[in-house]
Length: 317
Image (cartoon, rainbow, N blue to C red; front, side, top):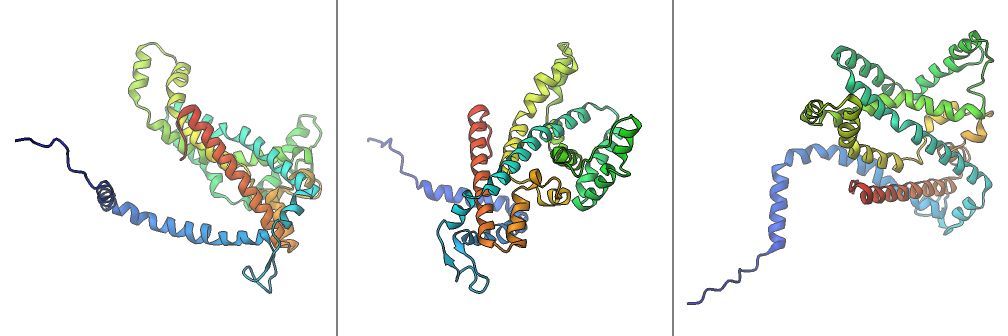
């Protein structure tokens, strides 16, 4: 009697569906916890996206979004024909790249330094002091910085005068604007950014360090051959996210420090959109500017993600 060696054909789709069902049932509480976050994203991020239509319209309040006439790409033609737009574009790019280059390594360095501190009490106190500015609004921080950097009775200028120097107009100078913005960003967010890197450092197996100690490795060698390679994937992911948000300079911070004396370098996309959209009432044009900015950010994110995937095999998606 012959026995057939051909196995019966399985219904792969049904098996996969059943596997997915069991997987979701097993982790149902995690899915329940994600519902508020998903609802927030859908309501406040995806539903308002229908407003993008305004970029292709001659928007009228009386007719609304669905009643206003389409003008195809007239807003974009006006955008690319405007000299002011190119000034805003170069200001935004220069500030974003400077901020990324200077600010990005700071949380990594702070996390590495904190990781080397042996006194737990000092370590916790340092962490708390570094996190605190993150919870303070830009309005309050702007007031504090104005007092520090003021020409009349600012602490920094008083110190410069003590050293026989000349007072510097930090807040009313185009030359110092980017320094003030990048410095204040580091002060506010660098401590908070260390949380992710400290979490990554805590996941490194201590046996690696013990083995390196037995082999006679010093602190720098442990840092170079164990810590940094172990932290590399986290750094790459954070870099991709930072590049994705490179076109966002933050409205509050820029607007607080913007004035007539530094407007030549402080006019970036966020303040430009506010001035032409909210103040000037050119809603379709400002939507076109915002759409252009979002497209550039998406292209940069995809490009960086692809490069990271090619070089290290690490990517967001």
